[in-house]
Image (cartoon, rainbow, N blue to C red; front, side, top):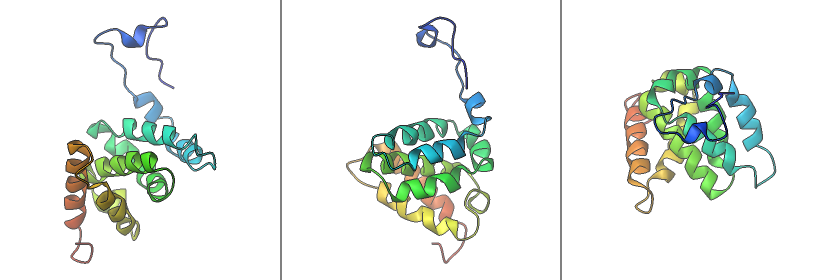
Length: 148
């Protein structure tokens, strides 16, 4: 885990450098996937929010893909609560927008990513979610004519 500060309120001080890199480097994807895949509906949205927060920095895309982030997120985007599905689909959109689809979603898995990204497109959603979903779909469509 990343220790983000000295004292109880060190995280809240302005300009405090806190990076999730330590958390990303610890192989958190499988553990978080298990927590989100539990049968407890109350636990489901929290790991989804953590996944979205970890995908926030485009520079971490390679680490996320290397640890199996795409593979862990796809099942979560297809089942669960509506809030959790949106968070996971947004995280998938962030990965799909900055990663090579052949590496991030190898084989037939790339076809499973399209549905959550299309479901993320909605006029009632945040503009950033729509933009990143479109960016991810554009990146995926450049892979093959069949996927397009």
